[in-house]
Image (cartoon, rainbow, N blue to C red):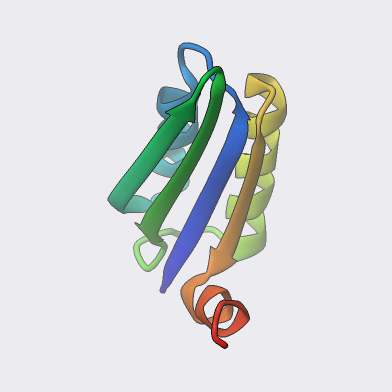
Length: 89
C-alpha cells in the first residue's frame, strides 16, 4: 500500500535523515520526496510504499510521531486513497 507522509516545522539539520531512518527501520520504502524551505520553515511530502513492512500501519504512524517529537516537527502519514479522497473537489 502507498501512503503520503507530510512533515512541517522549523528547518534544521537532520530532519530528512531522521524521518527516513524511522521509515527504513519499519520496512517502508520512499518512492518520491518533495521539500520546500520558506525562510526558516520546512514542508516535506513523501510518497512511500508500506507493502514490504512487517509492522502495522498504526506502528508506522507511531514511529513517525515519535521521530517528529524528537526532531521538533509535525509528521503525519495517510493512506494514499484517503489522501486522494480528501483532496478531490
